[in-house]
Amino acid sequence: MPPSATKLSSTAPDWVYVPSVHPLPSGEIRRSYTPHTQGDKPALVMEFISATEGGEYSINPHYTYGKWYFYEQILRIPIYVIFHPQIAVLEVYFLVEGKYKQQSPDENGRFWIEALGLFLGVWMGRKAELESYWLRWWDKSGNLLFWGSELLEQERQRAQQAEQKAARLAQRLREMGINPEEL
Image (cartoon, rainbow, N blue to C red):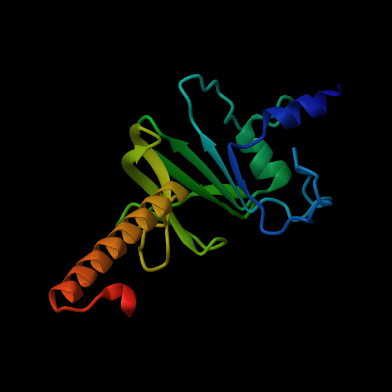
């Protein structure tokens, strides 16, 4: 395997947003992504710092490239996000005149990501039975966007409330001498 293949696999981000990707033939699964060949270049990459982080964010311009240098100077990714979940630190950098410039959060501690039309911020809470700091998205009005599991729970509660309301209404009709099944 050529050194560049090793280098590229080691620079894969933890999360990436690509505005437009060419569709795959039916049944195929995308296991990797090549910018410009398979669609747009990434507009945003995220890295999550782990306890085993080992200097991968260096600005070293020589092989092996650090992620910072690779995203900034080679791929020229417009937005670079680094999240430290253990200490709830979120850093957002925009590519300005060829260099990453750290952004400041708004009064709510969130960052506006124009490419997505959303705010990105840190949220403390429970997910998958784990209480921790998590990255979350908010819409332009400041409304938290729900995870799929939260949407399912919300819908379950809504259905349960509708059933309870229907049962109360049926009971009230019976008290009035009306059989609800005959309506």
